[in-house]
Length: 224
Ligand code: IPE
Ligand code: IPE
Ligand code: MG
Image 1 (cartoon, rainbow, N blue to C red):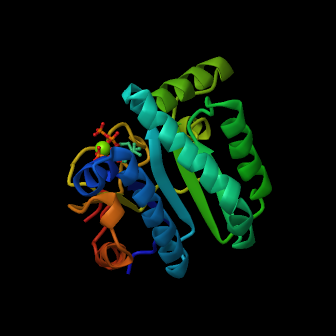
Image 2 (image 1 turned 45 degrees about the vertical axis):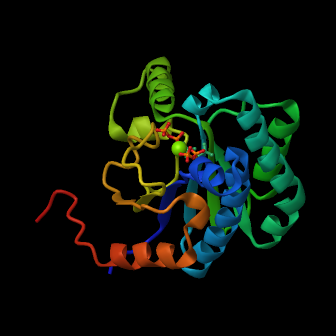
């Protein structure tokens, strides 16, 4: 059976769910947050050490301001209300992406990272204003500046995922089969699961099914 250390998720489909059932994309984001909580619990139950959640891409700034504000407000409220509990559960929060938000949110994110930095039950990497192409370009710039050799090891030292194992599994909900600029380097050998369901209705059972399927895949890594 394959060991499972790291699950990455592109949580897609909130907007479509919200429009269909509540006549509002933002209502879909609110509902999607409940799925996040359920999936975190299930991740802990399955003793998985790393969970990386794509919450906002560098391209998502192209969305209407009202939606962007709603998303960041949701996150702000979530962290304000739940950070203590997250900390008590021995969960570590780490942000992937550049913290270029309101000073209130930037401070809150820094606080969450700092407060939980010693926790070791589960590490949640929240990809926020994250884009893989930008991450790679910046990593190459840093290599150049340090005058070190361009090789895998040196590049990975400058990625935002430094010290993280690569994801074993990538899940994308929402019936769309693309990577949308997510972890292009790190997903080189991940097992990819495209899920038809929209994120707000993705359940623990769906998640568990993917985990079980993953465990029995023959992972070759180029070998036979
Ligand atoms: C959530 O899904 C992704 C975020 C940016 C938070 P979407 O908002 O992309 O939902 P759809 O794809 O429009 O349904
Ligand atoms: C990817 O979803 C980003 C997140 C889930 C945060 P999008 O819905 O933004 O992706 P595209 O634009 O459809 O490719
Ligand atoms: Mg989408």
